[in-house]
Image 1 (cartoon, helix red, strand yellow):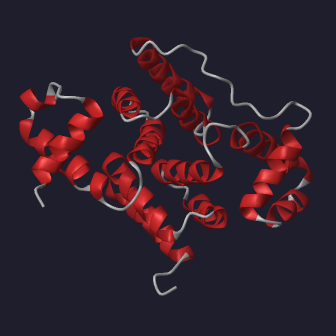
Image 2 (cartoon, one colour; image 1 turned 45 degrees about the vertical axis):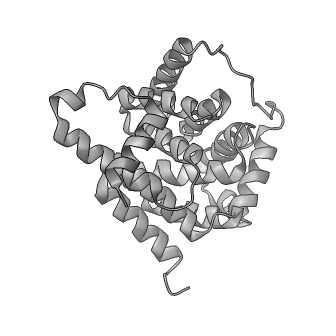
Image 3 (tube, helix red, strand yellow; image 1 turned 30 degrees about the horizontal axis):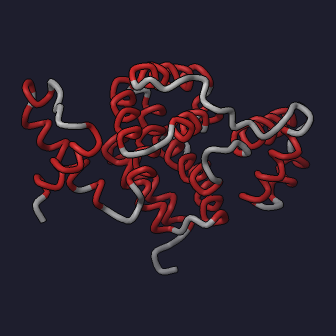
Length: 252
């Protein structure tokens, strides 16, 4: 397999023929980058290019590598990812990264949309009201993780119950119920966000279970983490693989 030819074809599909300044200042690094990301990782597994770019967007948002994020928003648009899907992927980051980092990313997305003549705001995907966000969030949360969620609410100390309530209402009510991305995609993106954060192995394992419960099998999780690898490095990738293998050992 000609990795150089494949990487050139994939790079041009995503970004066009403009190679950027790295090709002039650091051609060896550009060659390694292209071969690894666009000649190997992008051809590994069965994820669609649209899902790969959504994963890349959330990992770059997590890393706050904003110039690269901007480039991949352009790439996502080039291969048919909708403006709504891009916005929803970044919104999905908010419960895990906090609002400041999410806002940094949204600013970059909006700059790309302006250049691409995409009107903002995009169509709202909100599905809850102030009165329904907790109940609908709790329902989605339990559909992913089961009755353990009721136990978490019941066992939380009185002075910490508000955190569990926020988790159900905000993370799962305000975010997970939204349109634009289906539940399987949202849960897969969450696994990638937590993997890229590092130090969240307990939550990674919980979301491995969550992914399995919504229909993403182990191979899908491995392919998603593989897509994260060039952007978050080997240490966090190996930690994520360890978490996946602990939940779903290879002999099962």
